[in-house]
Length: 265
Image (cartoon, rainbow, N blue to C red; front, side, top):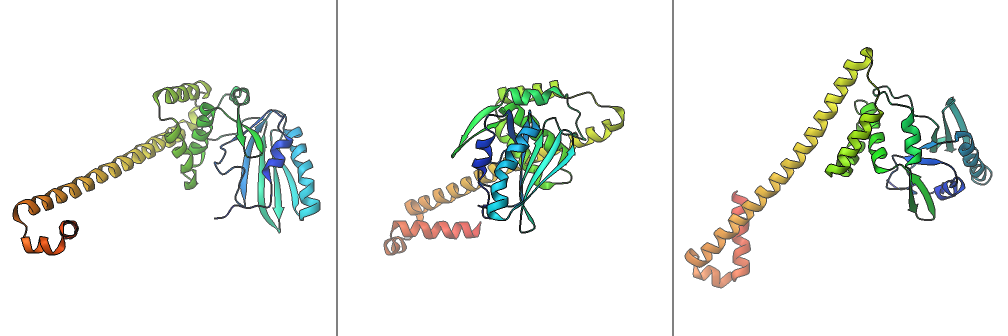
């Protein structure tokens, strides 16, 4: 799948560089993107950020025949769609408050913590802001818990957590902060949420089990090849036919014997 080149994201993020914002769940592809992608942005002033995005968007309307639409779902969320030839090219999803997650109740001050602890990230021709690793892990955990039973592609967030919370210190900080920002469940949703969390834990265990099986199979293969190689060497030393060894040479003789043993096994 090829990157789209219709929109230059550097222009947009250079325009909002002085604003208080973070891009959450940022793809490693950035500033490249694929057609139909969306960028999730938490920001302090949603109206000002939207205004600056629309200002840059005017060039795409006037010079490149784009249609730009802004849709407001509530007072704390809007999205800006860049449409080209009747198809969505790119979406900017803007929030000035945590989304209303269904499967986890979160304290509102998490949003302010994410903005407060943001870090700079230098990209080609563009400086952007992203959450700290701890808050990024929390957001990806929430996203995975919210959608994994409906959207299999959300497994990417679990993979990110497993890869980036690999040290005891990082894991402890992630779990401690997650605990601090989670509100107590109400009775109505508790059973549903507990069921999802058990399924989440089961998926993690299965991923770890798959990895261990792959490692184990690799060792078995190495052990098998080593045993075959040793047997061939012993055959050369003690029981090989001299004519065959003289005719083929040692290297060819060994490779031939190994192939026969592996085929047999």
